[in-house]
Image (cartoon, rainbow over all chains, first blue to last red; front, side, top):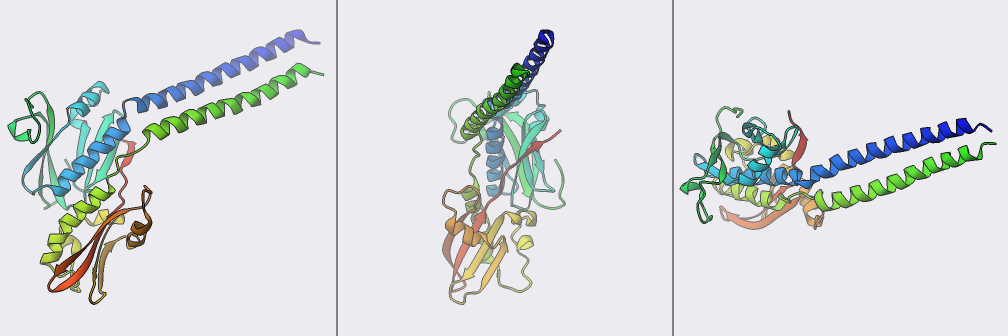
Length: 153
Length: 146
């Protein structure tokens, strides 16, 4: 009977068990943390709501949408503010990006050019149905212009 | 005979079965709670109808050389997931752009998220009655963006 050999085999099995267990739980942890802040759902929601504004906007007028919470989350995820929103006038898509490596996009059916103005503090014009001071809030602003030559923003 | 060795191998298999069951349970639970998306299909179908209807009232969709996309300012690339269907109730004449099968799919869609949602209504134009349908089934695209 080779007791020494049995012990080494047992140790080998235990090391493999431990390594696999650790690997699986690291993968699970990363995956679940991804859901923690509802990043996918928020990107989906904001890309669709911006599409709603574009598809129902009066051409030539400036549009704005309250995005304070979204921008704060993007800041905490180290996403540059200039990268959060992308308006692609060639493929007619709005993209919202809340994590450094991924984003969600949704298409608008109207043949228009969206001119992105940036993320700016709110003014009285942005107030709409909101009450109180909106100067502390952040709004994404853009102009829905008549389509001429497609241009990327 | 190495009885201990055989037992270890059986445990190895059992370990994976248990691990797989636990992982499947967690994945299913988390996905069920979080993987739902914001359902925008009906809103989009209504927006499309609101945009196209004034154009329909103004222009003759049934004219041979009528270019829907240019004249109604709608992007052609989007119409692999949308439908505009106009049927003359009196003559049966039909105009459509997009996925024609949405007419059937909308009838049976219910709460199924894979099927399109449509808005259908009757409208009058030039003394004729038309059944106007707008459908949408666009999915948002999530992916890696550098």
